[in-house]
Amino acid sequence: MEEPSCWLCARPLGRRVEQHHPVPKSRGGRETRAVHLICHRALHATFSNKELEKAGDDPAALARNPELARFLAWVAGKPADFHAPTRRRRKP
Image (cartoon, rainbow, N blue to C red; front, side, top):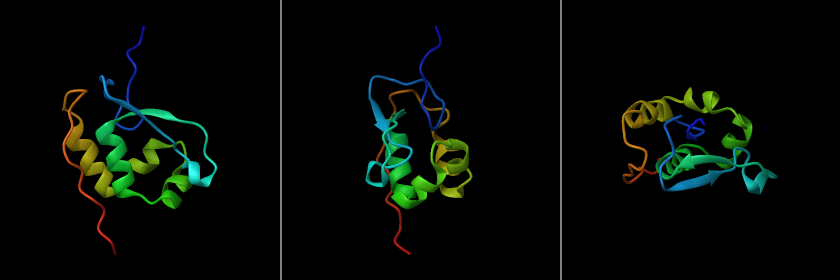
């Protein structure tokens, strides 16, 4: 049986799993994807709900963002239950 993995970073999931709506609930999304807590925080710190709606169910499209790409490279070698504070998105 294949070990479940994070929708965003593809690392194995640990004990703490959150459900991410690729299309935000506020924009009519109902489907969810399992993600690490830290990955979920990084998504919402990097993108607005409008940007998440535009990307939809495509983690590769999100990963093309330089800020998220840096996060994904950094988190790639971390254990499944690793967590650290997430930097907030800077207001333009």
